[in-house]
Amino acid sequence: MNDMINRCAARPARRLAAALLLAAAAVSPALAAAPVAAGATAEGAATDGLADARSLLEAIDYPALMRQILQLTADQGPSGPDDQRSDADRELVRRWIAAMPMTPFVDGAAGRLAAASTAAELTQGLAYFRSDAGRTELACIRAALGTPGVPDCIRERGGEAQYRAHQAFAETPIEDKLGNVMADGASEDDFRTAARLAIENDPALAKDAAAHCQRNPGGLCRALEPAPATP
Image 1: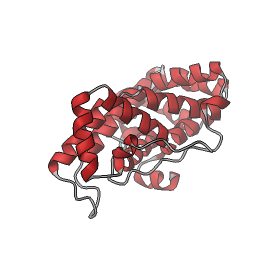
Image 2: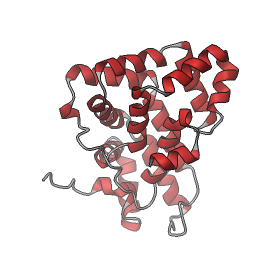
Image 3: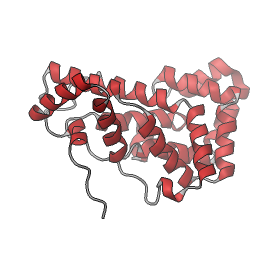
């Protein structure tokens, strides 16, 4: 996936581009499970590592970013020639996605990031995104939506010093690991949990989703199926 991401956007803009690609798959009629990196589970991370990973995700405003990405993708037109959903079906998917809590996505991403990173790397990432340069980068990522315009935006808004800090951080291991977590995206369990919570908290949505899934099995409707047994 990294090769595709690098073709779509310059490396410093990789995080959002990766997430956009993930979200495009997430709301397609044939929702495919996004693979979780081998061994990247919350069970393998220490409690303090999880706390540091959560702090880093909070620093990049991951919940709001994920919600924005999912909503932007849900607002797109047909995903391909096989996408025969009606306008009403698309509107139901938009409602369903808008109702999803972000906690399952944050939990999953924090577990994967903590398992892949050292405490020092997480501290370095947190320090960068709390710095002026990091905050400028985040603003530019949201403004440029994963296009190659992010570096120019950082230079224009933050000046040469912030641009150099951005370039230096782009070469660090934690930048790669954070980018990889975004590229790998959410697991099927993350989506299943978020989608289930959305309908459990909204009886009207649950009723409409059940009718929708009779017409359009697959996609988000996988959340209504029993979870696969753990081997």
